[in-house]
Length: 129
Image (cartoon, one colour):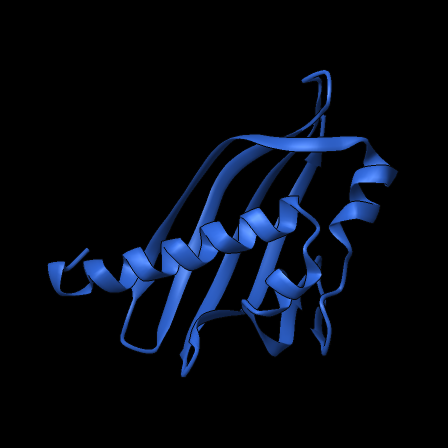
C-alpha cells in the first residue's frame, strides 16, 4: 500500500477493531456508531438495504452457541481519503469449549464521515463445519 495512505488504513483498522469489540459485546450503540445507514448487505444472490443493524449479536450467540472468533486474518486492501475496502480473509467461530461452528470470510466497505470511518456495505460467506 502507498505510504501516503498507511495512516488512513490504520484509522480504518482501528474503526474495524472497535466494531469487532462492540459486536462481541453485543453493544448495539457501539455498532451503530460505526455504521453509516442505510447499510447495504450483499447476500447470496441478493442485496438488501437496512436502516438499522440487521442482527443482534447476543441472539446469534444464543442461537448458534457461538462464543468467540479465532484465527482472524483481515486487512485494509484499498483506501482513499474518503473510502476504504477491508477484507476478513478468514476466521473461525467457535463455541465456549473451543469446538468450531463455522468458517467466515467478509468484505466491508467504509466511508469517511465527519465523525470518523463508518461501515456502509458488508458481504459475508459462512461455511458450516
